[in-house]
Length: 264
Image (cartoon, rainbow, N blue to C red; front, side, top):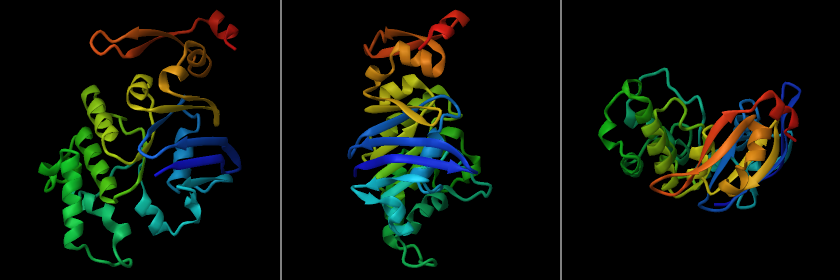
């Protein structure tokens, strides 16, 4: 499913946090949002998964305005994994994943059926977490929790998946595992990431956000050039080749005061 964000602006408490952002993701693409802290990435994504309503513009799924859809229908098409997805209640893993089936049940009190159990089981298998089904969610490691939350999103059977910093608080191995998993899931993916090397490796396209505005977009290694990284992130970037894969990696230094003054 294609997702289009057209001239989107978001206001919170009278402040305009996102201004006139346009973004497109074709069916099956993994599209990344990158930018400094406070640049508006999470605010934009909250608008995409309808936690916020845009002040202007629209979010469209295959041409249909997401905010005009029935909420249940929207949840069948789009699933989200926000930054703060923790649970204070120690549900079992199976119960957490079953929450993803709520948009598909009839009525607010609709009961889970045999098909729901099969779908949830398959979602856990896809993320390699079927063995955790009877564990308490709060007993899991950070990487295990992320896998379970992705399984919950998959149980919604969405065609678009929105992820806000899915590698936050994970160690290096877990980061690679989660993003490799996301890359192979199938739905169109819109993901915000801090780590530019991870974004370059796992995304088809990148959109760079700074001060609530879109400043660059395109294939990762076309976008993440030294001039843009100096201007947006305040760092000097060096490109090197991975000795085994040949993929371009970025190494960073802080800019000197003199370089910062001369940066466009």
